[in-house]
Length: 404
Ligand SMILES: C[S@@+](CC[C@H](N)C(=O)[O-])C[C@H]1O[C@@H](n2cnc3c(N)ncnc32)[C@H](O)[C@@H]1O
Image (tube, rainbow, N blue to C red; front, side, top):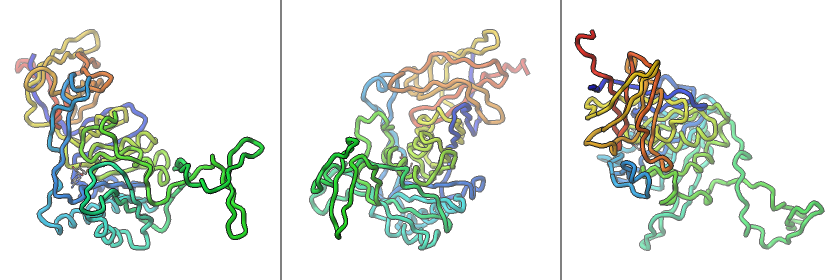
């Protein structure tokens, strides 16, 4: 049985509770379809480092069962011809975000000290200086420490609102009280057993209960970068912790509010949105980014706009009909064996839209792909594979010319 590659520009994974869309697209080009419909845009673009970034990919069952990621694939480049070129990119991105936002929408731009001053001026231009809300400092301890100057240990997140008003609930993000904060205060216990401390200031007595919630200021020191062995690490360079995105989204959105990220990378914004019940829209120019985000979010009601590769590679697959079902058995993909296949799915491919009926993805818990997948019998039946190089391919059984 011979399968031939067929064109497909979109994948639909129906069924999940949270709706999400990931598009292989340039974030600087405003998405007209969503203009004025987004509540919060967060963007963590390249920082103008001059570097190139990679993804450390797990390949096959052996890597997924262990700690290794044996393949390094280029993910994206942060090299620019000139600073002006980078600034033109950043300005277009900020304008794109502005276009997407609704009248009460808010914008977060995540950079580091290299370009944050320029970005502030650009955001003032696009949003209006009086719509500046906060400059958040995300301070962390990880990474190397130079001794030639003070080590750079923070990123800057600029926060703007589009219109005159915005929705903001600081109480949505209570944090742990620092134990040492009130050491100089006298600790007492009230009649209900609650610990509290008092301090006299300006002739008044202030009382603080130890279990009263406290809220973050604009310097965040309590969220660390993902550790090397964190199971949520995708291998995509520059992945931000989901907790950081949840801190950003919780005060400014409610379940159901649309969240967008125009440079989504590994999809941390989508992961945080999905966890909080917010629908999401994400774009990236790297197909590896789109597929990394997709593999994190396959449990959502997901639409992925990523064209299938023209050179579908080699696929060996069998298909048998049992009653009203088709049973596909995957034998080999790419250079042989199944190691290069990261996920595979069966479903219908109609007018270039592949709708998933069943999908198998490698995880730490299930390092091997399912050998067989089934779907209802259909003349549009197709097989889809995404591979470790960031390629998506769709195949259909070759029709015998006498069948036509
Ligand atoms: C710093 S990474 C984002 C990391 C992401 N926040 C995460 O947690 O994984 C920047 C991303 O911007 C993407 N990018 C660069 N230029 C872009 C453009 N013009 N449009 C959309 N994405 C772009 C890169 O491919 C890269 O994935």
